[in-house]
Amino acid sequence: MKTSSFRKIMGWVGLYGLWTFMAIVTIIPVYWMVVVSARSRVQLFDAPTLLITSFYAPNYIKPLTDPVFQRYLVNSLIVATSNALLVTALALLATYALSRWRLPGADNIFFWTITQRMAPPAAFVLPMFLIYTRVFKIGDWTMFDTQIGLILLYCVFNLPFAVWLMKGIMDGVPVELDEAAFVDGANRWTVLTRVVTPLVAPGLAITFILSWIFAWNEYLFAANLTSVNARTITTGLAAFVSVTGTNWGEMAAVATVAILPALVFLIFVQRYIVTGLTFGAVKE
Image (cartoon, rainbow, N blue to C red; front, side, top):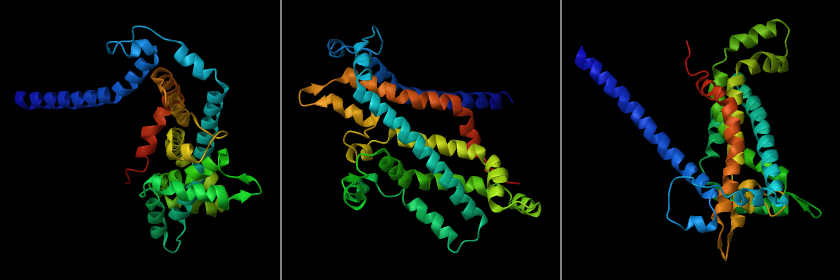
């Protein structure tokens, strides 16, 4: 009995030790970024230390008071929020149709949406550049360097993931609820908005959260399909790399500010994450 209890205790100690180690490994790069953002150029080339011994405010003041970086931050907020809302709404409609309607080849359609995530994003940069500069062109206006261009482009990659995530959640809602609502005189739209949507709300929340984070952190397309007007905060980091050197302090400061909205957002909605990811996982 004592041996069994000892093994159980050691198992829990090992498990918590592993999770603690993984947490430390994950946090160290973020912490080091904060350390670098708090140092001047002279201190950066001094003896390295993990301790924050001082705070060099100009690293934060200079880029954040620049109207250019303020516009980058606003662009990121607009693009990420708009894309997350659009993706969540489309995923709800798509998964409801795939789950409730017996569409010909529904399984193939679902698999086809997932294949959009299999190709490397870099393979789409040149085709999307040509489409945005030559195909979607009205007079002198193109979708290149526009917020709407980024919002729609991110749907190409976020929507398949959202559909994949919402499909299992939608399947967890009994079809009998729809049928009972139809008997009471409800139409398809009423069933979707008043019966199904409240039940899959946790799944919608996690879909919105992950889509928002993916759009907020995206760099490759924002760097290649924007130039001035629609640049996001992640692309602004490249401005600190020049032929004369790299301003590590200001770059780390902007990177720290860039992760704060996502961090604050996750703190307030973290209770929906586990609920949304496990919703519909257990069926009776």
